[in-house]
Image (cartoon, rainbow, N blue to C red; front, side, top):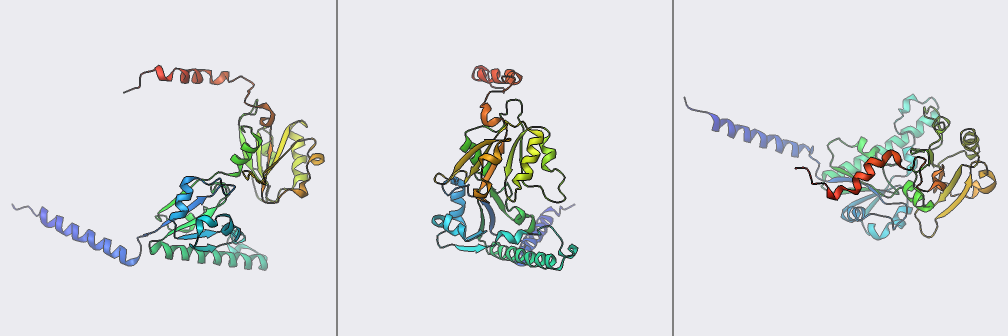
Length: 310
């Protein structure tokens, strides 16, 4: 009996080619690439990978005009599109679910603005262009990863991490956040908001190090809560413009004296962090003297003498 394997192979190859051509014709294959790039907390805290990404991009997306100034040496004459941050308001909320007509109208307007930007991005990607969204600090901390949720799942994409405000603030106070003497957890949080389950007072119960992203923070209410859970002598620090060599400023106080030592009205509303915890004064000393990690630490000492496993 004569085998028909060659015929099946040829038919299969032709079918695969036809499917590929049809996909290309329908525009389902994305030719470009979408990037979200962390730019650091100051213009000179950008990573080499981020520099390479921005230089290689065809189109830049920013949140405001200030970005054009901050990164003008990298952006140059590239196309730059701006989608203001206020357009993210009501992200994830269905406009029809809002009873207030003004709120519903704003939700619809912002949803349309986001949809229009995503459509522009898809159009550029279909033409083989590289589109980069520039995010100050690190995009994985209150950043704009929602773009990836709005784009098709198979869109070629990459997120490039940056130096975030938390790392820059820790560097500014020259203290290691996990070294809290008898605590090691670091809780990153922000102002409470309606409907939130893990409200700040619940988080304070453990006595862990707290790092507050201070957008919309009610300091009076916050320190009332802190005084209920942290001793009055617990150190705190406010870091303004973390990572900026010219503007960075560190102000230190305690949970008990904060209102006397720090004038909140003078703090830059969108450019400071609040750090709370014993780590600020404990240094790297720990209550157990690192005894709990002794076996691991000692094994590292002799690592170079142990033959590698094959």
